[in-house]
Length: 175
Image 1: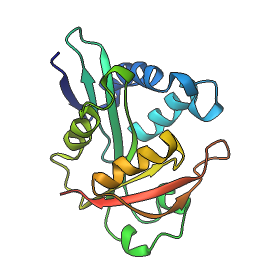
Image 2: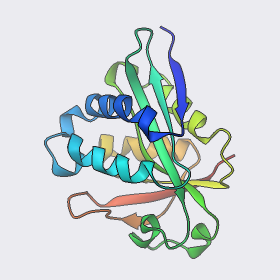
Image 3: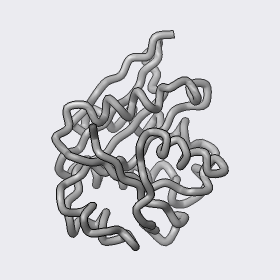
Image 4: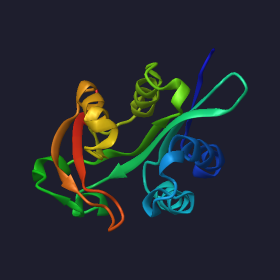
């Protein structure tokens, strides 16, 4: 099966397939307030209007979305950083790409698709680094280990909203 990756910088073009694939990827969690589709759609709308928005969506042979990632540029003082604890200010000096979401539907997990999506998201970016937040309990810690394998290092913690679990903030150079 051939997987096609498409890069977007316009939320209006990306929103429908992004929301559709998010609902498939996060299906077991959709009953939780922080993971509900309306909550995600609200976050996506906010992030899509922020500077440097970029998304990559993977489509299967039938044109169905099977994976995604998106993010936007954040600078020192951005809401992204103000919710963080224990982060060395050296990480906030330069604007960075904040990887807000990444996910792949079950049949495509473990195939390298998430890494392909991630790398395409970073391609052509001028940011010197990328940061993300991960639930350290996701996949019994395996999700954080995947990011560590991709070169990310833990730099602090955050709890973006009262409904979200405590998260680990991670950081790596874009190249």
